[in-house]
Image (cartoon, rainbow, N blue to C red; front, side, top):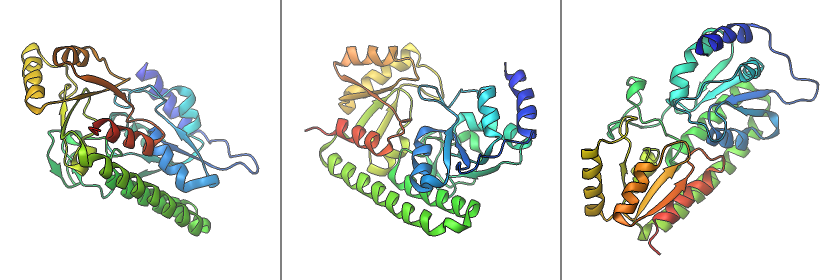
Length: 284
């Protein structure tokens, strides 16, 4: 299947994309729904935005369909989130066979290494914790990068984009303020199946404990040690995501008598999802 899609990339992306019909806004393509939220918030009605990874799919393993590749050939630019698995597999192929402009919205973000340590943004992509959008601090940087890209693509509407950037930054700042208020009386530690909240935890001084490590399920010995760590840290919440198997999370929850809470770090409604995580950790 991947060989077939690779052939289709050449056919689709080297072909001339159909120009938008009269009065139709040009298209931009993004990787994730949260990034679509940020881009649409600033682009307004000047662009229409397509998302490559559909709802319910994992951005670590998703392969684009031939239809998506055709649509991509008609896009004016691609906005990548930075380091997610889909981009590491596909971006080089897409760029090699297309004249499409690519903008990295993670540029300037202080990254966390996959081992949990903080680093600058100058090292090899393979070791980066990729869920950069789950952070109000990072969201402001992402928004500014989007604004810069849009003004490069469309210089005539710079003031329009600036006004919408300022409005989005106000929303991000209000979200951050609400989260900080909720976390004044909250759990310090939480358990999560897939470590998607590393930047959220960093921003607010929390400890994220992950069931999955380097994409692998825990061994029985690791699972036992994890349960003991949860007891020690008085874990009250286990976050799970729909893209992943939750059997080990359920086993731990049954053993400890704690709550399993579904979350969606890939939600389009970024402010609501960030606040919902904080509300769950709030002890009141």
